[in-house]
Image 1 (cartoon, rainbow, N blue to C red):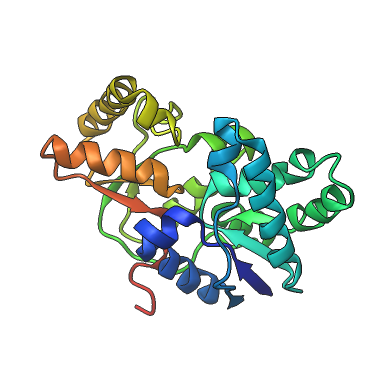
Image 2 (image 1 turned 45 degrees about the vertical axis):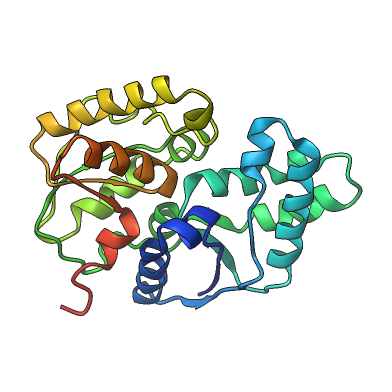
Length: 243
């Protein structure tokens, strides 16, 4: 299958290893991957903050770029950006033909773990990682896309990797895009409560599917002097490839 990678702003600018790992994972799953370097933000930060006019302009640009590709699927290493693209037909309602065009793009857009498990039927990518890990359910992936079992199935098939469920794994990490900037005290408190639960499990790493959550958790882990790593699921699934 040929797929178009929508890499997301945070991955592109701040967690590029997750983007490279996503390409490696998709290729290992038998996909041909294309990437349009003209892509920018999907518009979610502006939309969530109430700047709907700016968000719609970004959404239209993103839809226009993605519909140029005849790839069978658009794959995103981020539940939040995937959710925004799925929401695009509603967000662009009343904008002429844009809602219909957005619906066509949204219909073939998938978050990485959901694409692997639900579309390709792939749960074992031959990855190997000698770590005990905990999974953090990113809010958009869990609540808007219904992705709970898919990433867990993938992690359970990573050789040498032990998945340990931490209490509160489905609770928000406190990032929430601009929430963490507008309410830093609340944001840090939410992160630290989650991290305390993760540390109590004795794991080596916390894994998630959104760079925003991982940046939030990694920042607080480092501030607390913790040895626990923060890893994107694509980095885990790409580990030990070819071994």
